Image (cartoon, rainbow, N blue to C red; front, side):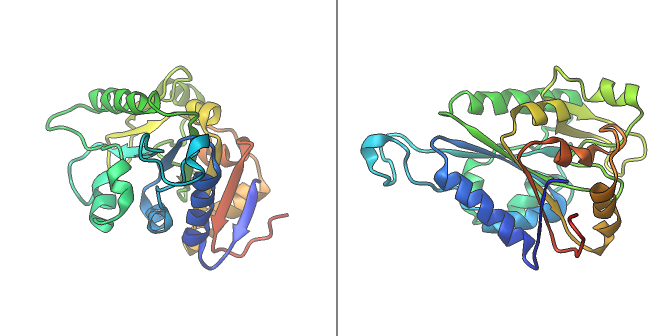
Amino acid sequence: MPQLIITNTPARAAGEQINTTIQEHVGDVVCILSGGTALDIVEYIQPGKKCFHADCHGELCEKSECRTIFIMGDERVSGEPTINNFLQLQKRYPEHPILQHLIETVPKENESAKNFALRIEENFFSELTQLQNPKIICILGVGTDGHTAGIFPLESSEFARVYQDDQTYVPVSVEGLRIDSRASFTPHWILSNVDMMLGYVVGADKQEILTKLNSEDKKLNERPAELLKLHAHATVYTDLDIDPQ
């Protein structure tokens, strides 16, 4: 199990860790956000940072903006404001400064999940290639079934087909989902590229899954939240009382 932070204010604590990382990193930052309850963290994130150019002496840089880029780690391929994660975030925090640095993940009218995923991937890499020495932070929530982001438990062969190792951001269609069309970063890309991972597991309904994560191991396709245990630099924030062992 990764480092476990138990606190009455997990959203604030996670946001403060992200802010510290943004301020201390010598370079730009990419912050991959999570929907659901993990949107609580956004309230405490500030994209501003002091310049890392040697001749700016730590002050805000006017000649070249020091950038923090935000994107949803997974998205619901819907234009409904109550369903799409980007639109939910926008509605919840209409004045938040991260909106100025947030890659839009709203599907165009009649856009297929496949075309949506391709377009978002292209937009993401277009932004990423402009950054200097980027550090990638990823927030992951955990579902009661052990899914995380748009990565769901599947049979091994189906998991490999949906979340191909040579892909970055993929369309996800899993039988039984309330929102059938989704898109998500793949687990292989996350494990290969994310520098710091933050798990956010809060609420009484997550007690069982957090206990299982803490006490037993499963294959990634069986419980995608195992990503938090496979990553070398992961911290889980929770308000649940559990023995970290």
